[in-house]
Length: 314
Length: 290
Image (cartoon, rainbow over all chains, first blue to last red; front, side, top):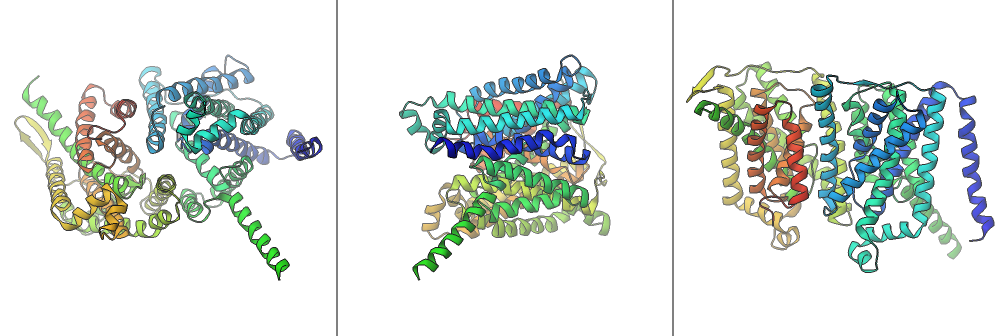
């Protein structure tokens, strides 16, 4: 690949960044709020897929790390400026992920999935118990921040997440991670430090989840454990990644965007049937779109290609 | 510590343990044999509970008699779901690991669907009815009669199911499929029928447990998920795919939960998770696992 083609591929990305950066000057408040939710799910989905897509370990602990970020904002929000408590939210999640990674190393497949789900439920129940019995409260107030600041903070986290995912996927380290996903024994034999690689990639992803949680918390103003550690934050990223196409960053972003918009639409138009319809969409996607939207696109392209070739040969 | 206090904890633990055991054996059939880690398992408990509640409040049917209606109804729903959704998924999946992942997600979809259909019909209110609420004195331990009836029913259901599994020809086919699906198929077991049956029977046990639950506790459309989590913990505790282990796991959880309740109410759920996480870390194959 020559430098010119490489550079030209980056131009649309630059244009998009500029558009997003200028958007608060023209867009309506509703658009901004909607974009904020999309950004949140893009971060959650891409950082979930950073670890889970190449390694095939399905983690259901996103809610734990996201929620920790939210609580970091609630506790530190009054004392620290915005960028600092966002960083702390990410950092605390990162530390917990290192701990979880170290302890759950031996678990594979379904055991890992069940473990991560149990972990996030344990944290939710513990925080709930702690708040009621020790602090004597149920929920907490989070400091309010100028919506534009929140938007730019979210945008920066999205860019950081996408950048990290992009460069990790292209690096030698990313290759090692994919190798682990193909076969852990083989990866071990060619000299990859399997355990360290898995823990590092897992923890890096959770940093962004925690940072996103700390940022979004300022938008909600009131939080309690069942809001912050809602299991939906664990399932949605999985669903979104599968829906869009798990193995490409583009697919993950597409899945997060489309499903967030769909959820917004369902929630405003059919508030009573929202979760019911979501369940139906989930099952339809799993049954009929195993490769996600990207897989569907590839299928259609292949079909056209075959058709064209068919004309050429006749 | 006197005898009545000890009996209180034991009987309370056995009642919860009996229910948990039924639920856990049900999940064990669905995960251990049919390979579906069914997170909508608790929703079938909820369906059973609401079936019994509706029959009792509408036509005054005795809750024990309603087991005969709610059980088969939930069985048919489970059987139908397996034969439409999970059978197709299983055929589509390139490997059994891929199937486990996709069926887990599909069962989350089922959870949302069943829970929200119940919510549309019954609304979010907490409901309940009174049945056999006179107190019975048993060596100084005083319990409501409905709790003892539920315990007895759970034991009877467990025994009948045990006999079915270990004496009937179909039970043998199920145990064969639990050990090795491919070999069972080669030996002439109609595998998709048996897998559907396992899923249906799992739902049946959950539905029966739900009916029994409704005699003692209040019910809501959201009651399912905590039971699902307890069932998952009990199944892992007993060893994934080990049906007898799940039964023991359920009993142990019920007893531990009841003891923790006496020490500090509100901590029992946290205790479950702690046991669960420690178990996964120390011996992920469970107490009866290989």
